[in-house]
Length: 374
Ligand SMILES: [Cu+2]
Image (cartoon, rainbow, N blue to C red; front, side, top):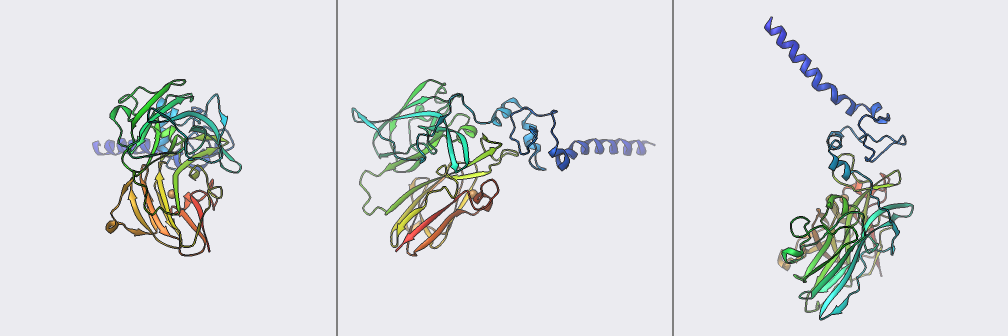
């Protein structure tokens, strides 16, 4: 009798445990509007206005997060009361400075703008000075640098100088090295630029939202002695991701329901990415910067390249790997160089091939053409 009772109880428990899992894999449910769990903040992938987590059968983590108010905030669309037009169609351009008592003074304004990923696809982006990426700060090792940051975003922010060796108080970590820069406030960063190399700056406040929304830019520190034999072409390629649904922009992240559907090099998706034109025989340097939340194995057609610097630090010649694909993880930088020996139009693209699509349609995303002319 005890055994039968035990079996009955076990069966009941098993049935109870299985029941909640059923809707996750039921595709009919995914198409049906439901008011039961929606919080109005979740990205949508149907026309029905369904705000439930509805992407795939693996939606459980996102669905669990939706009950956490802070997580729901992460899933809200990127919005601002004062979204301006982009200040230029080209991001990452050199930022002018003024000299004050030997200090190079730069000015940044964090603000929301409309940014075009490719013709017909516009996002609401959080930017430095109105472009994605923000303007490039390019200085010489040993320069005294002052960066005045005005926050015109609706949210607090800070800037982290990723890889640059700054004093602790300048490191941009909210609640640890500084108070967040509140909307309308200004904060001044000041440090000596070191070491030489490829670095970046980006938001360190709600980074999963603000960096995904576009708050990043290159920071290049040149050697004090000019390079003896600089490459003919020296390009910075910042890799990132976006999530656009029903005309709304969300911060893409590796979380169920928040996966990206657009992928950009310097804020542009192919075919809007820059074509790099070089002459046969030119030395080409590409500086990959992983600023998104996903890894991107970048593959070059035609000729291999050498990895000459990792995370800004030079690789001794004897240790330089020769490769044709390099995985750029979030936060990493790789400087690679090659000689353009073969004329033609050569692709450079991510080899996670979903990342070469725009909203699931190929070709798009992380691709660009290197045009080698005679
Ligand atoms: Cu990729």
